[in-house]
Image 1 (cartoon, rainbow, N blue to C red):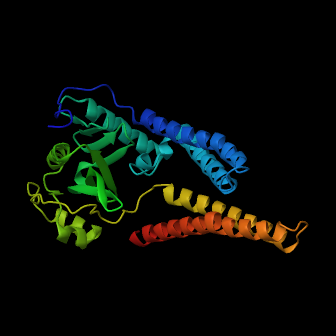
Image 2: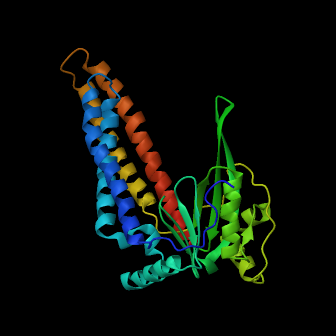
Length: 317
């Protein structure tokens, strides 16, 4: 079987706050890289015109990632995965201590995946760590299934990716696996964590919606689960309402990109309309159009997509 077999021996103490800080450092590192690369790409704009637009975009994205990563490092309880386990920091700290004790117990089960991620099940919690953090109470697990996606280029399949989708009452987590065998190991642990949760893809579950799915699981006896099925490529439920900051980050980045694009468009349009050189109307018009298409357009789309995601999250309540 791909992936390390289920283990029952104790593992080193799990420190989810340290892992949250590690995630934050990774985000901040990407932001720092953007702060360095942004000015370099902008300077290269003297040779490649697109750099004049792409450089500021990278710079703004890097700044957002650096601020977000720095905040999460200083306030690890602000990590999206940790905010959902309690209403206050005191409740979250108590839950984290409970999770740590459970995962260190001899009865805990652990599955190390080929990606380096570790999926663990304690007395009350299921935890995915080392590649991000996913926390769910066992009683909140409602559905798990495998998904295979064929990636094509010019009509030719270049690679196939496999993942397992874990659905809870309030969120959805995708776990990358090496192949069907490793996916089956994840679903085996998932079934043992919640015997009444549905396991295996089914069209009726996908169409039911999350509230109906939760109600169906709650109505089942504790020892009943669905039969596994074959998933269609890329099948998934709509994202659940959660605490992710990515829609907000997308909104800020989109608005910043839109504002930068419009500012550049108006600037170059002004040059075209008030020429000081015979070539100013030509170059001003070209750069104004380029700024609008390459910068303002994507910024508007990113902001609109983020607003749509936030509105959808609010409707799901």
